[in-house]
Amino acid sequence: MNLISDEWLPVIRASGKKDKIAPWQIAEMDDPVIELNAPRPDFQGALYQFLIGLLQTCFAPEDSDEWVEYWKTPPDIRLLQTRFMNVASAFRIECGDEFPALPVFMQEPYLVAEEKKEISGLLIDAPGDKTIRENLDHFIKRNNVVNICKACAVTALFTLQINAPAGGVGHRVGLRGGGPLTTLILPTEETTLWCKLWLNVLDIDNYVNGIEQPTQDVFPWMGKVRISDKGGVDTRPEDAHPLQAYWGMPRRIKLIPSEAAHGTCDLCGVHDSKLIKDYFTRNYGINYVGEWVHPLTPYRFDAKKKNPPLSVKGQKGGLGYRHWVSLVLAHSDDADSVAKIVKIYMSQRAREIGSQRVARLWCFGYDMENMKARCWYDHTLPLFHLDSAQRDNVLSWASDLINAAWDVTKNLRGQVKAAWFRRPGDVKGDMSALVQEFWEKSEPVFYQLLEQLTNFPGDQRLVPAIIYAEWLTKLQTLAYNLFDAWALNGTAEDLDMKRIIAARNELKSKLNGSKPMKALIAKANIGKGGKNAANTTVSLP
Image (tube, rainbow, N blue to C red; front, side, top):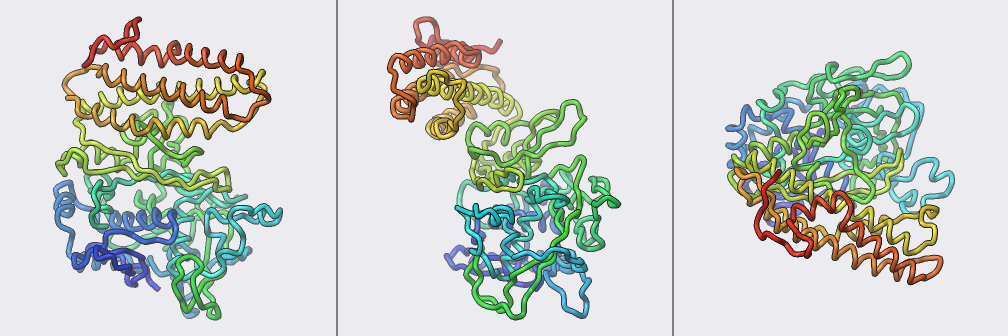
C-alpha cells in the first residue's frame, strides 16, 4: 500500500456520499470532497495535518498571488497527482521480504525489536501497561481495539508521531513537545475540503521552498534514524529541513502485518484482508531540541532568550474565549505568539480574500498529564478581518475584558469556599466545575461584544465605554447568580447563613474593589452613582 497512489482517505462528498480517495483527489470538482470522515476526532485532526503537510511539502505556492489564484480555482488534479507522486517512495507503509529495508512511512523497517506491543498501544488515549497491570482501566477498557486495518494503523502511527507525549525512558516526545495544541484556519461557511486545507498552506515568500524529491532531512525515515541514546545525537533545526516540522518522527516503530489476521477493523468497521495486530518499538528515537517552531502551533517565547520556544499544549478545562487573545492576536517575539499560519491570515490573507469574517480558528489537542491522556479538546474561535490599527486596539480591549473575567473567577471560587467552610484555606478540592460554568455562561456575551469591538475604526484610540459597562454588568450579575446557586446547594460541612452572607459581601467588595475590576469600572466611565456617564467612548490616557 502507498499513501500517495492508493485510495485510503475516508471522506464525505458534496452529494453526501462516503468515499475513499487518494490524497491528490482532494481537488476534484466533480462531486467535490467537502470533509474528511475519520473514525476518531484525533484522527480527523491528524489527517488534516497530513494533507496540509503534503501540500506544503510538494505544492507550496510561489507567492500570495499564486495562493489567491488557487484559493479561487483549485489546481487540476493531474498536476496535484504529479507533484505528490514525486515523493511517493517516502509513503509506503509496508515492504516485502525481498526488500525489507526500503523506506516505510514513519517507521524504521530494519528495526531490531526488543519490545512487541499490541496495536492499541499506538492510540494515545489507550490504557498503558501500568494501568492494565494495576487493573485501573475503568473508563477506556483494554482489548477494545485488537485488529485494525492498514489505513487506521498508519493514521494512528501518524497521530502518535506528531503528538507524541512522554512515553517512558527514551521514548521521545513529538517535535512540538508532548500533546501540542494545533490551530487551523477554517472557512465559516461550508465549502470544499480543498479550501479548508489551502487556508493553512503558506506561500514560499512566508516560509520555505517545497521539494521535488524525497530526502531524509524532510522525511527522517528515508535513511538511518538519528538515534538519541548515550552515544547518539540530538536533532536541532539546523540538522534538518524546516519541512521536517510536518513529518517529525520521535518514536522508533515498525508495524507488523499479519497474513492470518483478516476481518473487520475495530476502529472504522471496514473489512480488510490483512489487519494489523502488533508493532515493534524501541526507545531513543529522534530527540528534537532547540528552536523548532511548527507553523500550525502557537508558542511562548522566552523574553531572555535563554530557553527555546515552548509550544502551547492542551490544558485542563479546555479552550474558550479566555484564550482568544493568545491564540488569535498575540504576536510577541518575547512572550505569547500565535501560530505562524494565524499570523499570516490575520495580517495578510483576510484582506486578500476580502471578507470581514471569512474564517474561524479550529483549535484541538490532547490534555496530557505525562503519559496519561486526560481529555481531547476541540474548539473553534472566531476570526475577524482587522487592519493593523484595529488589531492593536482589539488586542488591548479584549485583554481588558478577559483579565477582568479571570479576576472574577478567582474571587468567585474563593468566596464560594468561604461560604462552605469555616477554614476555607485548609480545604482542598476541585472547584473547576464552578469556574467552567462561569466561562461557558459568559462566553456568548463576550463574543457579541467582541464583534462590536472589531467594528470600531482603527484610526481612533478610544475606549468603547458602553461595551466595558455591559461586560461589567454581565460579570457581576453572573458572579452573584453563581455564588447564590453554589453557596446554598453545594456540599458543605454545615449550612451557616451568617457565613454565606459574609462571603457574599466579601465577593461584592472584590467585584468592585480589585485592581482589574477597578480598571474596568474606570474605563466603563461609571461614576459613584453607579451609572454609565458616557454611552460611547472615553479617551485613552
